[in-house]
Length: 128
Image (cartoon, rainbow, N blue to C red; front, side, top):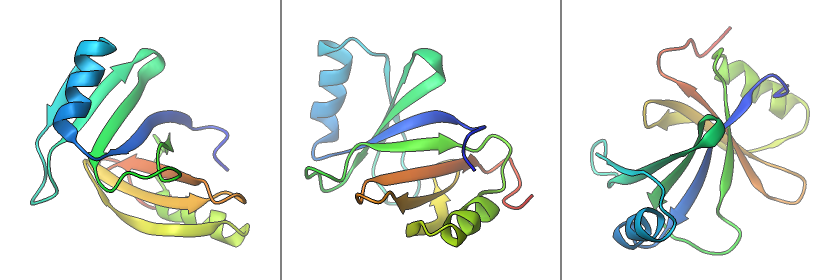
């Protein structure tokens, strides 16, 4: 079902967005951009690495096991159909299709409880 998509993002929850920005920019040397928040969600960080993979950092409770989250980019859209198909195949949907920065996302759990996410841009249709 996701074999034709690419990993577009790896999302991290972090306790301190400023400390994270300084670490990934100054210590690791990644080009980090601070992104303005929508509404009252809080700023987030974007660091692009090779192969068009982005590391994304959100301020949220950070504890072992809830980060990172691998995000499959659905360039062709159809997120609603993909999530319905995953549920039909027995995947546990953790977060149904919902608004995400610049588009839509949903999360599901693998058999060990690891969260995997799908994302599509708001510019592509939610259903195929």
